[in-house]
Length: 139
Image (tube, rainbow, N blue to C red; front, top):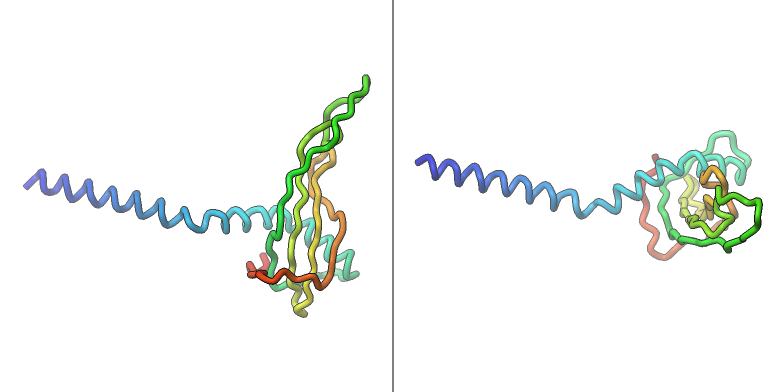
């Protein structure tokens, strides 16, 4: 009887562990995207404010359309220090798609190639909606 209880406990533990890992494995990319968009929220919000000249801006949903890794040209000069992305370092260029509250679509291109490595707006495009643009509700 005691070995039967041990087997039941073992099987139950295995199911809980396996079930938990499969439950969290599938939406992992969605969680990562949501977390990253949460970090990008201040630059997205301020970019929309400057583009649309609004004090308070709103949007329905937001998605990361693309992420591109870039490497800058390596410059070798005697007195330069490799403190940012101007000396052969990596940086990222991210395109964020936004569906505004009035159903207008805008894409923001952001980079982080500065000393602070904070993202900033490079350019934007209006009404260039991707065919497969599925929304994540705004934060």
